[in-house]
Image (cartoon, rainbow, N blue to C red):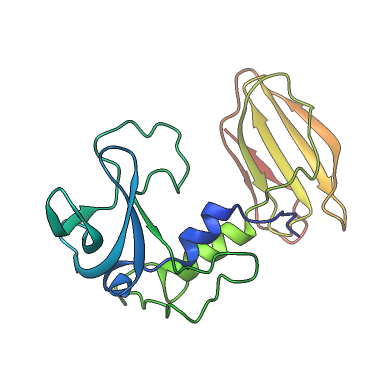
Amino acid sequence: RRVRGELREDVRALIARPFGNEAIGCRVSVNTRDDSFACGTVKSYDPVRNAYLVRYDEPQRGQEELWELEAQVDRAAYNATSASKNRIRFLDLACGPGEIDSPLFPEPRASGETLLRFPSWREELRHTATLTPSRLHQRLAHHSDEVLYLAFSPCGTLLATCSRDQTTVIYRLDDSSRAEKIHTLQHLSAAEHAQWWPDPLISILAIS
């Protein structure tokens, strides 16, 4: 059972926003070179450059229509959020809580040649974002150095954590997913990998 909080606004917007040809006809606000925003409508899309042809409400750089790249290419975006990495913001986008499935934009279908678990990239992103734990459930503090690897048993009731402190700690998880330490294995060097043997008793753990 996963413990998670509300999705950030920029993540909800990323899931709900249109991509590619789906964006044609949408109202947008584009971050210009002087760091201001200009509004317009998407008229076309170039998949080779990942660029949108925007017809502006007011001429920009002396032209009514300009091809605009979505990514920030002329400034550092170190450790930026998903929203700040993009120059184009969609104005007619419903992205509040519970509005991710807005009928304004249909789901794009993924190619049959992909390895997606779901029929579209948007559904894949929605699944990943909504099921990623985002609230602290329990802090495990039984290692004195960096944890290099962890492995859940096939039954989901045991957890092994390998650390640079030359130990592997075994935990048992209860029905509420709370972990209780039941054993500590001491090694001659740092353990970097652990694998539970898939036997019915879940009694064998290989560590390297």
